Length: 194
Length: 385
Image 1 (tube, rainbow over the protein chains, first blue to last red):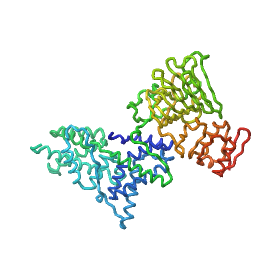
Image 2: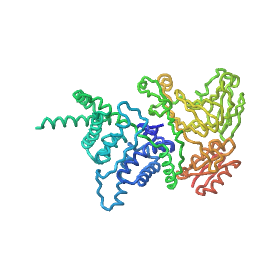
Image 3: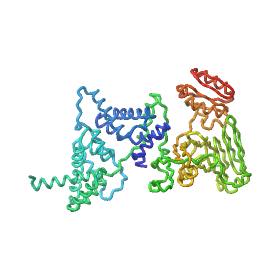
């Protein structure tokens, strides 16, 4: 079943409680299944190595188990994990490169593949893919913010905290992305062959 | 001063900002209104918006096999750090958390929609505990003389044969109540306090029902263990074979258990002082059971299931704290154990006791974990450093 691993914020809070109170392994597994792929993708965008990204995320989730008794005390597990992964990824980067400068323009953003069985009324697969391709052409910084908002479902405040940017920047970058989608639609729909 | 061209661009860009805000759920009410107004001025804008929204909302695919494989690797890494976890088959990962809705005038509005056994938010409603043993014993028969009651003292176990041929093994400090004369007429109903292992004879049209604390178990033909000691924080059900259906009191939700499932229900006992009679009738507060499902624990040699080892007259514990083991030993041997040192309380222990007396057991424990001293005076045991 698709989407079975996605959890709401309330569900996450409950799982935290179950892990803290009962060392519930099932809850822990669900947390892992929910967070692993998006966190790995985020780490990868910074560290640009799949193996390292997996290690970093695994380490962050090991910490969660190690600290399970106090887990319920974390107010926002999602942000805790994203920030932890960000820091670990930047640290790893610093280890490998001597000079430490990191700009959002250097990220390497990979989008998750779309669920092919998703029902859409106005879009067909061809059109979807055209939009995907158009998004790929956007600057990395824009793509990252777009991915975090659209796929990872982070709030503006969360993205701002995570990337150390302003809400205004987020507004601006997302409008660029959405405009790109619109113009792709516009171009595609204006073609006589469609 | 902006040229008309620049102004148009500005307006258009404002639309995209608003659209993004709407799709991310960040738009305020006034922003949504503003967006609607802007859309009205553009032809076909709503169609574009719908297409954009569709694109934005296309779900991503989760490669569950990849996740499962990655979790395996993750568990290995955890093992290297000394954490021994098990993986649950992804088909069994369905959430089993329940909410017990109570219709008091206050919370009637807050009653959440139940989505067929899926995870729902657990409302932190405080309930008054009326699930005490005297209540649960008032079950089927009004004819008190036909009530059969079997009680075991701490430290003794007994096997009961029910009128239909089903067998119940009662662990120490437990009680089984049932209506002897009407048992099996339409239903086969018992009430359990403490711990019991049930081997139920199949009879489809005469359901076997067990009341234990806040749960009701309907047996669909089978062997399983129920642990419902009063004063303990949890109620546990472990299924060895067959299948059983568990319902929480005052809830329409059902949990169906399959072999090797273990269900733990936390009994929250909250007491309301004084006004108890009034509270009982009018506010109808009760317990909020919390449930979690996991697997039965196999002892290290893999042939003994810990939860039901007592049926075979074995006391088994696997990496449990001294405090937990002491609790088991208290019921098993009918003694009272007091551990003075906190460090000792959390000391993990592993072992199996079969025919040992309590002093032989303590001597064996001390042999394998020589960090404590003990003293036995009558039925009181003191454990200290």
